[in-house]
Image (tube, rainbow, N blue to C red; front, side, top):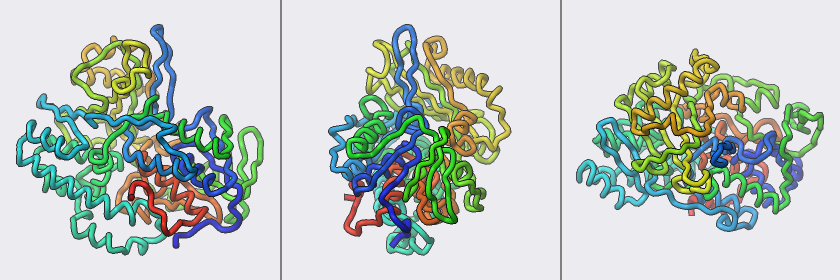
Length: 504
């Protein structure tokens, strides 16, 4: 059995109301624990936050974190743990198409979750052989998901020996430990399909030329299982989770910053707040970025944390606009001519993209209530190096904002700059100031030696547990939700009969 905390577990303090902390809090409350969540902001959500930008025409409600929601059964699973039905708290709508991909040759490709619909799209845009290759690719990533989810994602791992299961042999047999890009090309020969079904490696902080093929499971979650959008925006997810948790006895204290965890030997006994309070607990769950939690809250910096390499960061432009663009969908990926070069520049050379690939999300496309009547919201993400790069974002930020607008207008968003009514930008320096190590919102990269049993464990000492993207299983909304359940299992133990909704 996986290791669990020792000693009493009646009173639990969760530091941080991000998605991982909320997932853990709900499960712990459902198991009868007395749970208090301390959150330094005035609302739940963590990275899945929101800003309100006022203009003469009204207020724009803009998500500041993840915009792509997949695997909603993992959210429903958290509601199940307290006897609630997610549908009573959250309204999710499928996004169709999942993405619209634009290519430098002027072509575009809509990505659909339905395999037949996607195969027909590929047949019409590229040809029948590529459509047949896509069907084989779906079979491959579906196998990856089945073999990985149970043994490598949806469980606590204490040792590399925990990976010695029949599914490990199955992953080896289907080529899961070969490089991702060459494996994808065995199914998808056209550069357009190759790009749209392998760019997800960026979420793991790796180039598809360096990532292992097992990371194609992200493409399964992203492009086969479907993409959804909550009414009210992505921030509606943590709002709903917090409200349901509060109904079941979880106490939330917003505007409360934890400054340190008091320990006696290997046991945590209390947390201290910026207001001078000392709050005792039997178990402490830490949701801040794991290396930051170690350094700033536990006062420790073990080698296992110091050694980590981090994913690229991103520059984010959030804009409330009077312009609409009929050619775009909810999520839009614009690929530059360079592909391999993008990853070389960002990861190896640690410099800004010379030929950008970028994401533009238009949330008001699916939920017009997020913007004033007749207005639109644009969430524009440009990958950048993290703060290991010698870039001074205090001076580079304003210049790069103008570069982002220039590229957008060049890629078909005519008049984008002049149509902006309100805006906010986030640079890697801003991400760091919000508590993300190296200014990397995608946390430590998922290289082989930073994955599974080699990723920082979610338990320290006798009774401290971590949740979030910095620990197992890793980055992305689905993984963070799973991390909350794994953190709860470190406290409660695992029911041997339990299977999450994602596996049913």
